[in-house]
Image 1 (cartoon, one colour):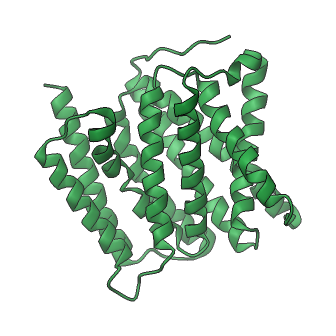
Image 2: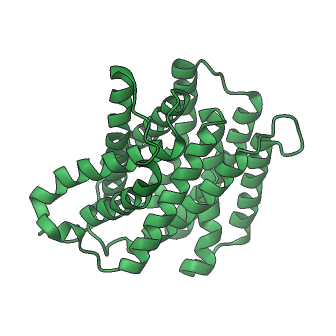
Length: 295
């Protein structure tokens, strides 16, 4: 049985792995939106994402660790983490059924900002006034993207806002389990619980994919999910989270590329402008954390 793997100082390699993880995260969203446009129900797409993730994880981890791969030292936190990841995915996929991938991705960039706020009461982290101001600036970027006062506003943006809130709690619980759980447990619990929870709701009204392309995307979305999370977990063992966090912002450009290439939709000036504000505030938070840790 493999134990909890220790952290290693491989910063450059960690940054590369995180960049690759972001590519796979973008592939998840692009695949989900493509399947939704093809007519598959949102919950079934979520189910496919986690069922595939579970199958690939079982094939990868069980030969190495056997039944010990399912063992968790913190079942309550692991359950909570799994529930919030599932909730975040469901809301994100429902948002993708109505919104461009660039909009959902840009709103999701507020996750590190919300994590900063949640870390104060949950993890007992101290956050200075400058980072609080940066958080407020970041939320103005969300307002620029969503424009609740204007014609661009779409009710599905509430799905994205709910998704980023749940994702933030997921990352908080992931921090709580860092150095406690194995990679296998971190992969198998969320995917396994999500698959079991969704099966009763999707199997009765199952819609089969049509044609080889739909089947390929249907099978690939789970592989994208597992690969992205495995890379991200390993990246965080090799480099500090404060160093890796800015890499997530490259997803704006990847999402814009996917939106244009796959769906023929160009990002609006509001999406790009709000994205710049959110990224700037996130980078400032990253800079302040690095400065504080560096003394």
